[in-house]
Length: 116
Image 1 (tube, one colour):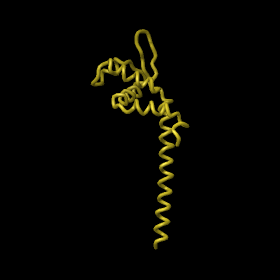
Image 2: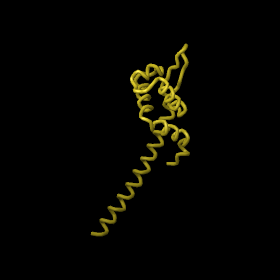
Image 3: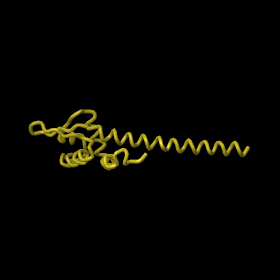
Image 4: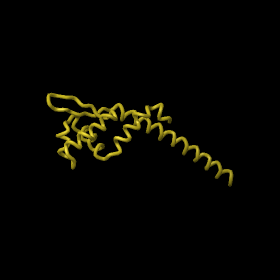
């Protein structure tokens, strides 16, 4: 499937953001908690709060998290639209490969029958 049809910029941004294990872990934590501050998220990670904020900025730029200011705090939550678009692209890619592999299988089976 053509990535342009699925929003190549969105998919590229999501895949780049998810390439880092810390950012994937942050998304997992946000999925579990619903909303959290960078300070709360940093407690369970081997990186500083400032590093967490930088990772969250990358996730935000990729469209994977939302930030909401509540008083003096910034609370982050998962935004699923970009992840959903990436999942649709990956599903379309998998379906295309399934079609190709099924065709190869049919050709191989036909060649085997013909050789008997």
